[in-house]
Structures are given as C-alpha cells and as structure tokens.
Image (cartoon, rainbow, N blue to C red; front, side, top):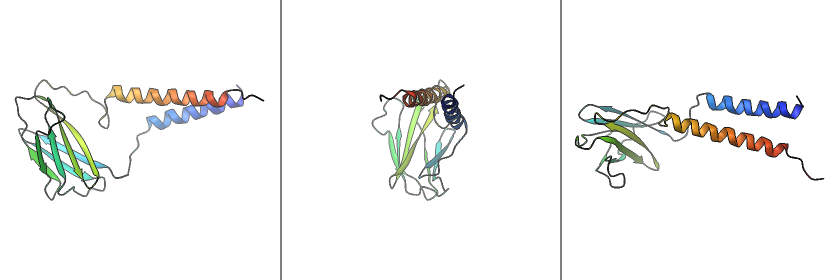
Length: 151
C-alpha cells in the first residue's frame, strides 16, 4: 500500500473514531431538565450549575409552534411550572432565554406520543445523517488532496 494511502486511511480512521467518542462542550451552554406529572416543571441552569434565575420562558403548544401558548419567568432557582392543555397531545416546546443564552426542550404530552430515542436531543436518524455527511466530506477532502496537479 503506498504511503499516501496509509496517511489517508489514518486520517479517515481518526475522524471516524473522533465521531464515535462522546464529547462535552463547555461553552455557554444551558441545561434544562423537566419532570412531568399533571404539572410540568422545568429547571434551567447554565453548564456551570448556576440557576437561570429570572429567565424568560415561552411555552409552545404542539399545534402552533409560532405563537407562545404561555409565557413566564423562572424563579430564583431557575424553575418554571405549567400545566399543559390535556386536549392538545403531542410535543410541547419550552424555550428558556436569559442574557443571550438559552435553549429549548421538547416535552411529549399525551398517551399517543412515542419517544423516538436518540442522544443529546437528536434522533438516531439525525445522528446517522450527520455522521454520513462528515465521512463523505472526509472522503472528498482526501480525494481533493490526492488529485494530480498540473506541472
């Protein structure tokens, strides 16, 4: 096997391995957790664990993702509670924002809502598609550098 093919194979191997290893971003991220009984309570925190006290909250019903169904503010511990309309089953979206930071959580409500599974908020189909795009891009880059240059 020629040396350049071994280098290309090693680069692709490192990229694929990098995609398979779990990573954690330590930037200005937000963690939003929720509990669901009849009332849904969210707890919004920065990655450092500091509560997002006073954060603006917008709740969107499953049938209208453009107009907030409910708005409010998190308490001093970054918590916000609401009771969704039981006659509107589906995925309820809750958006939390404070000082340029924010996030959104998707909460299934109702019996007919099935979990699609996934990691980090992405479905397995989305993860597979992203991995395929990265691999395809890596192959394209390797082929670009492999091309013969005119003299």
